[in-house]
Length: 144
Image (cartoon, rainbow, N blue to C red; front, side, top):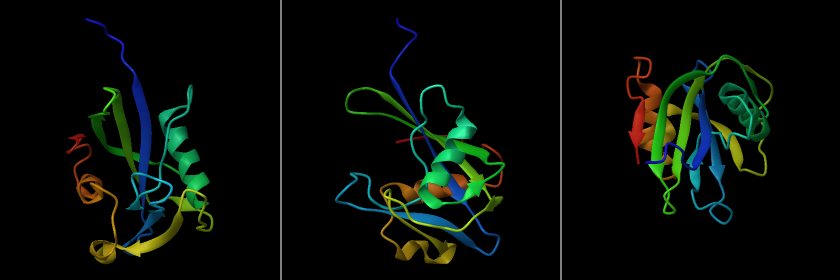
């Protein structure tokens, strides 16, 4: 039995402003198979640290510089090609900068109470529940 396998490493971050709003990214269905409103994040580059990668991805996609992202969970599944896919889920309210959209999609602040009105990306509601857990890593692994 081999102890090595192919793995795709990614991250996602819930950024909150302290007034009941979070940053959502509206992903273009013409460009992405996983489209709709989602939290910012992306792929972890080779030799890049986990925390450094989420800070970089958020900066690239939103213009915000985040600090002290807290790991709150993971999402895990296998692709059709049998490649393990991991998403490290972070949360922070410590940020600076001005929100700006990127080629990844339009970003904006959304009130939590308005989330149900958005066209959310597949499984985003389940992921948001992990972010909202009050116990650190209470819902550590969500299998797709």
